[in-house]
Length: 636
Image (cartoon, rainbow, N blue to C red; front, side, top):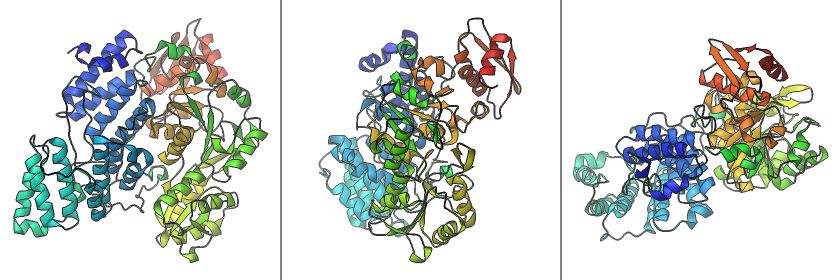
């Protein structure tokens, strides 16, 4: 097996890499193609290896997404497919993304993708795949008749044969069966069996089961038997090196309704990922997104030119946190305004703080010397209101715990506002307000205990101010969680909704997330598969970074926003020339050559700590004056 076994068009996509890296990536992609169907777990390992070495190549990210999908690693698949879609600009991956949402127990999100503008704009086989996903999601939600209607617009011609018609007929039969139309279902299972020349479905087995009267009455239509909508893309177009392949997976029998939230006790940050109950073969379907920080090579992009450019120049948009990144309370962080004025990237301001409306945030930024408009501000209040609109009908009421600004965001999505549980609100939305006290939290608890949907704008435990760290919305969310035994849907970072809204608002294809908190800003970037820069001007410290869990690890680290104008390799977390980092137990010894660049000691130190698997901040020892001076500048 050689790199030449890879399809020539795909190999051309690897020309941005150096020759050695390109050949290694090509071999991994060939192996993905060969193993994808028969050994999906091993195929995924090869896809991850390719991704580590070529994370900037769209087809590599697409291949990683397809491999993760086939291995039923739904969260990882969604992360990779989102990244590939942003990088390539194609909508062809939408059906796979929608089906991954189903795998995560979120059929309503699958329907949103299918019914959105891009989903409706799909044509040909891709449009059919999306309709299959939507039909399966409808059955997941207990709407089999809608599933039947969804598929009736497709080419249901019984004379057709082949894999695509067989899968369509099988899905239609399953929808009919779920709707209680058994005789019609038998007819279409027969059509599926006749069309299925390659035995990709179990239509004949289903017919046998339905022909047995004892089985026929006992079989409850189950979403877990619905043919999955998304076929694996043609490997000639993705990993290449193999013939056409198409496969399907069964869909989990989820018990999580569209208006329910999972029990993520003690960790509200995970509350937006529903874990379905599963009677098939899926184990824990909610998994940590793959750690995109590659510690095995010094340049994950494989592109020397990218390393030489400034960090900001490698991205098209900056998605900037506010508190702790641009300002603390009423004061701009020293050098922040100048740093942003020196880069050409459009800036979008993405904040978990739901207390102020976008025009107020923009005005505050302008007062501090930044350039900002309301359109550039994306708040968790806006995203929280959008989630309300997704779950409620226009005119239903939500109890608002938060500022009048949050209440106005709710009104603007046609949801009524109340401050009392006595009004029997359909939902509670909770955002930060300095005026929130016992009475407001109690009203929320009463409504939630009565069955109201609960959405938290964010779960930040603290709020940076010029005086230090004050109590954040997450601490008040925890109080309500303790009183109700329930957990909210989370709109803000690290959950995906706010990040998705920011990406959509900015139109970014390859954005960089910039923030000061590992557990919100950086984790939020990782949730949606984006690169990130952590700055040391806010909540998280170097000690926190050295012991960071994989899902909290940034791509880059720097003292402040001036890092954006430095060459990318100065901040990338990876081993650095001139610096020797030795890990022994809980002690890390740092040694620097006479010409070692002091600005690169921190990324190298962090890389060594992560490679050693430190679970707590180690002791750091400087060996020599060069190391002592560099670490002293960092306050270590």
